[in-house]
Length: 342
Image (tube, rainbow, N blue to C red):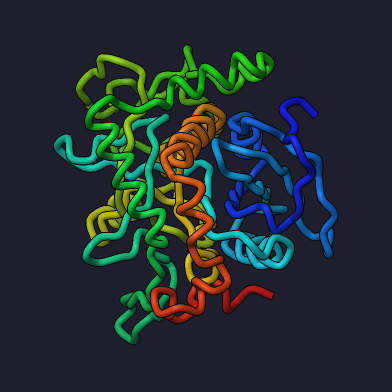
């Protein structure tokens, strides 16, 4: 294969894993690989893998058979059985943006949200896990683990680098398109799809495309001077449901400071030490559509590559493997994302 390694590799040589929920997210992750390796036999055929290299890291890429927390948990468990040297994972894909008010966390389509621990949560919160009380209120329970130290420290390093010289997301996107020209039409910045955040009170009318929505019912936001995706760090909300209601979205923002919603991270955090990287493809409202999904997935993939490029390979090799990490003190909280999966 093009860019093949100099010597045959074994499963034990792969220390970084990337999980993608859907094919639209898998393609740009594969597009970011510096090398694509020949497949290796595994003891089980449950997962579909792509093997390759980014920088100094041999990477296993897996795609889910279906979306959802349970599917993510099952794939991660099998991945760790097939590749026992994995140190950590990266969950890379798309998500619904939860922008703030008055310019706070000005999240837009094509931006990237990265899970980062706060004083309240470890970077991801499973907001649908809890119990319904007699008064009808919902009490959220459980706590998800934070990313491993090797990832958290290098995210800080990358943030500092961005403060000095800016992000390289656009550079990596351009390199991917140059290497794979067929991806240009689907994975480039949508030239004809406006980024519109409609007011929460304005509901999409079924049977009508958003091209016919009332443009006067959009939220006014400052014009950005360039097309470079912005990167936001904070809490990502995960659940086994799709949010298409701006009222619910805004409640999640108000109650838990959530920046993005998705459907897989809660199935991983307590069993698979990882970081969550999501490109914003919609605003989790009734106006959501798939037009921004490819570009958002590509932006998240570019951030993934940029992060891996700043992590020294020897540092990864010296990190405990993922199975050991999940049984350590750092990863000792209850398993709240996987217990209902069969």
